[in-house]
Length: 201
Image 1: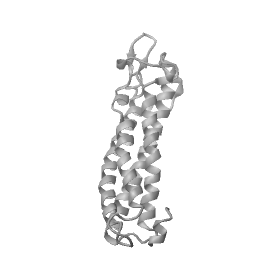
Image 2: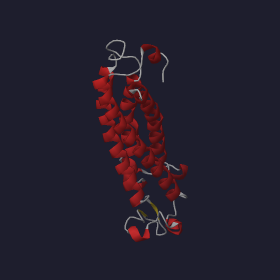
Image 3: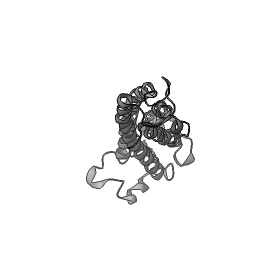
Image 4: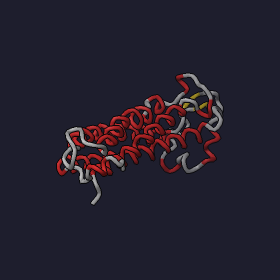
């Protein structure tokens, strides 16, 4: 039998670094190819900060809550002592689900539309926005040359948004698992004994 406390702690320990990964990726998106741009030269999806807010800040609460739910209960020791923390982790994980959905929505939109860059005519625009699904820039790297500045802007955009999307999907699954796990832990209690609680995972 898988203990709900151990599962909660493991979920929290995965969610916490994933939040920092999303925050880092979103911050890097503000500096395509390591260059500092004007505010109106940065993609709208970057300004929506799906990785910073949804996959990052929104995920700190459920990750810490899940880690604490995997420790000793705040309502007493023993099998039933961890139920209040489990209940708290359920609400926190539901909050995390909202953040993960926001993060994946923004990042998938960012990948679909593509980066904002300077084209050969000197205009800053979204050159891949109206290509259609049959001629996606994601599958045809020869189209990437349309972006003149910043150099490697497309690669920078695709890699970082893809990371945020993948991590966001992972967070979505983990928060969903913790909602179910927390409900089970709240109803049934933690199956670990007190000696196991002192030993971490």
